[in-house]
Length: 206
Image (cartoon, rainbow, N blue to C red):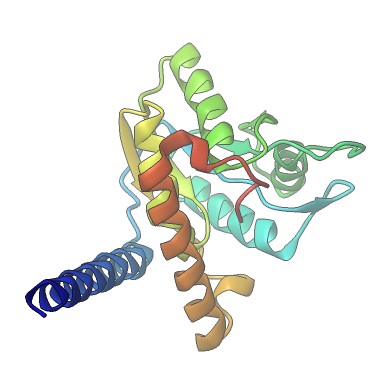
């Protein structure tokens, strides 16, 4: 009976620990999503999302419009669009984003069309920043994706990472949608923290 009692206590302790970890991570995702740091940096980095033959999806368009606003506010002198493409695509996510911004009056855009997920795209962006002597970047993505993407940006070696998430797009339309994204990002962040870089082997995160 004594052994059984200790086993039950151990199980209960593990459950409580899991609840605390998951709850703390979810709170971090939610809290980071509320931030908006517009301190000037070397580059505004727009993380990719789906595009349709050169036309940005509503998710990507929301990010691009926010990046255009930041550029107009002199947050950075250049916008870097990130994201690769799927087999058979004529455009990468980065190219679709760059075309969209250039057509709307943003002349200083660099497309980094590499990477099938957030981590790979940020690794490619970091190489560009290093080549050009840039050390700081403002990440633009959806609010709920901010914590994971900024952590990855720091992990790949971007020295100074700031974030200004968009407040538009499908991820913020309803309370229910926001909750689903928070749950999704909580799981994705915990997965990344446990498995490290091997955790980002799936499709491009949005």
